Length: 493
Image 1 (cartoon, rainbow, N blue to C red):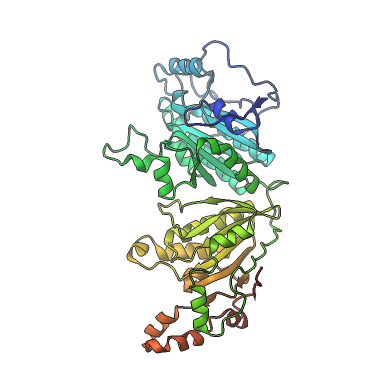
Image 2 (cartoon, one colour; image 1 turned 90 degrees about the horizontal axis):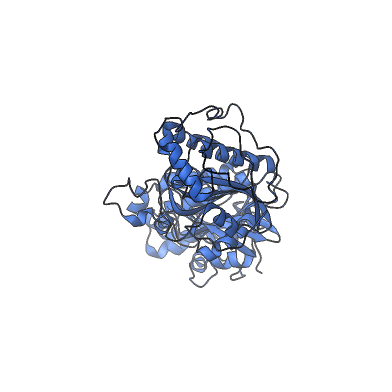
């Protein structure tokens, strides 16, 4: 049994990285299959306490099953001259006989299957034996009902094994999908570098993606990308800015961040069933009295000093972690999404912050709702926007499709979604985050099919008629309750 506790960095060995983020770990047994590792002295000693239990086997009908047995003679499946010697040197240099170490570990009291890549072993590349280990590890996680944490440092698929190496990505993708279907979280930590197929499977497919500062991340490695390519686009910071990862975490904070994420995503007792208790609506934090007119409701909701999403999230949760980005190249700072702890249980949240919601915001919210749904975690949405962004950039970014995606995520969620209107409810941009049949409102909010000013303009009314138009639209909280649009008006704290 190995004891953890060090500080992780981008260039630690596979076992150093494991020890840095875990309380304890023991290596999983070697799976059967594949060609024999190149000989170079005695094999590395197994960690004390390693279990002799037999390895998990992949289903016989899985992609890649049976590929490894008897796969190769000397120098691997392609007979690549010098491949055996290269592996022997890598083994002598690293003490490993493959590019990944799979372990059963404890992180902050939560058990997990952890995969840690050894970049010094042929660039952390994925070959058939790597695929065997990864498939066995994912299967082990499913059998035990555990999350998978991947500490990735890889240059991609192993050229010396050709297409036999490339097809390992299909094996990994299938295993990841099976674990997702089983409701088991997957967290990736991107070390330096994370490129090629390792990024496009273990990395980008994870539910939560963290990266160490300055890590090189991208499908194209440094030697194959265009010579004039912007290096920032291939960095952890650049990937965060483009919505591809959730956070850049300093080395000295990674262990604690992983512990918090695992506590949030892995409730005691394993994956939740579908009998999930809905999240209770938050109490109102603003003015307690109801507005007398429609226009007064608009003015109160637009008051800059009224409580916004951050105040509600701070009051509602004991602690929380956030995801970021739509995985399509965009980030909307006007929406906050993540998971929080309240009264001992996890609740997911998607909160509009009072600005016009951009396509990336709707896609991020949809991503959050789907993630919570497959993990069996209830969702809280906070509705507060003058409407969807309608500038040319928003249209080019697919505003309509993004709103449709968010509507679909809400409509198909199997877990209960609770929504609270905390400010402006501007048309479809607000409705996209409002749960059908489970919407509450605060006294300082309104919901309208269109802003009163725009309604007056479309109807060719005088500006002096905006106030009357606001009343005619019946947008006050008490109007919404009478119209059966909301379930109730939440009381103040």
